Amino acid sequence: MIDHAAISGTILLVDDIEENIRTVLGILDCYDIIPCTSGAEALEILTEEHIDLILLDVMMPEMNGYQVCEKVRANPELKEIPIIFLTARQDEDSIEKAYDVGAHDYVTKPFLPRELKARVEFQLKFYFTLKKLEYIASHDQMTGIFNRRRFFEIAKEMFNENPRDSMYTIMLDIDHFKRINDKYGHALGDIALKEVTSAIASVLPQGACFARLGGEEFAIAINGQNNDEINILAENIRSNVERTPIVGEGVSFNCSISMGVCQNDITFGNIDELLNSADQALYEAKDSGRNRSIFRGSGTHQKA
Ligand SMILES: [Mg+2]
Image (cartoon, rainbow, N blue to C red; front, top):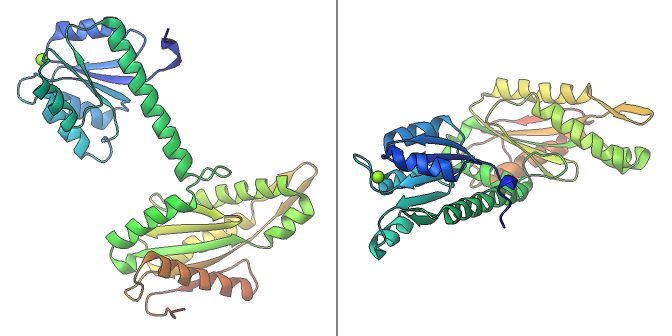
């Protein structure tokens, strides 16, 4: 027996025949279902509502189910949503076409209620598991921000897709982090990592990619700023971290960070070279006394 109460999700149900909609609503009464009667309406709802699964009729006037499916698969925001086709057609060509355009499953009319329920349940479970695995693979468990792997993916895309001098990277780490761990213990060291993460995240503009690369080392990739704005941002980050108390049982202290800020330019062949330059600037910030940022603008880079 399937525990139907265990899985919830919002389902978009698309069928041009109202009676079919009533039948499915009756069978899947434990789900939150948004019904509609045309492909155009379905595509509009998909831009407005969070949908976890689409039940899609094949034969509809104007835009058929295959066409709707192709449009969903072509949209980067929607392409992962599972789609189950609902159809009276049982010939092999129709079934093959459904999978060719990107269906996850295929249910024939008239519906067998338990079969429909089981197929919906399976697709939702599979989709939620996949999303959970994707989250784990791309986020740092301790701080909840992106991990090293995801940072390099996003930063590489930003490097390749934007005008060179509008992209900046910041490499930063917590000053004397080893001393914090030695003096207060690793539990408070972990609190420091989380507090510093929040202090930085709270001043970052939307669209900035912020990640923990490992240990006490973080990186930021950001677009669409100018030199003045990036230096103001770096100072906001520095001062916000400096005034954020790290509080444990019976102790409270403050920590600081050092930063290397680097503007992209044509001398960098790839994202690794840009990050290396930011890393060199970070070392310079450490060497010159910590709790500061060192900026390297376009045209001032020395190659390693
Ligand atoms: Mg129809």
